[in-house]
Image (cartoon, rainbow, N blue to C red; front, top):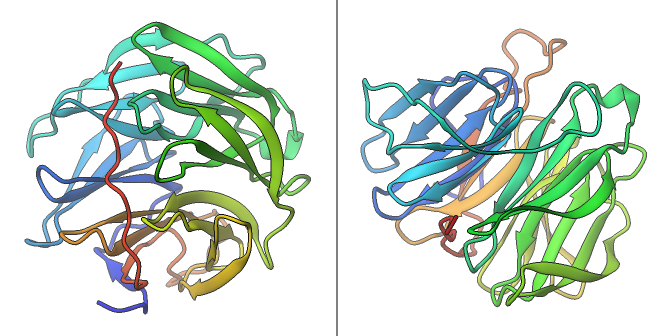
Length: 292
């Protein structure tokens, strides 16, 4: 595997999102949101497994041996995934959506194990800023930010003291950085980090060990790496225009898994919706499991 993207499996996700590397079993797990499916890939064996879900899951995080799923109406726990056994999510907390037709979208845990996830109105054509960024921990659910259309790109610096967040909607397309209070799990001092990508809209993101911010350029088939001071220093091509999220993993944490979206207008035979892996010459950080 090299910096050239290689396709993983044959699945075509409606909206592939939120890949997470679990060190304990050396696998990537991600969600196909409209497909209501969890997927798991083992790089060592090549095995690919899938589980049906009762609702759409926008993002996920590790929770003990199982998973925390941010779904349509709230946050759910799912036991460790076993091949041949169903995933049966159990409700942990609901959220009061501000408008009809909403669900959770992008999210991940901070370095202390608090789960942060944003909500959106599924019909993006409405451009409705009803989305919120929630924090879930042992104390329950709290709203951190509002006035979001399509919250995305949530990531944390290696020391956890900087939080990144984007809004993928075409009318916004910006990425912000925040100072992040690691004691309280609160972002403040919001500032513009990336005004606009060279091409495409900002979508999901990951951070490497040097603090580089890797952001998917949805509609452009490009992954961009920005230095902590906001300078673009690398661009990688992926053979699907609508790439959605990237995540580091692999035995040496040097594999970047990239998910994508397959719109109804996708041409037959195109790779929109496929999942890819590449080695970009950087190492990522292990994801923190949810403490909630």
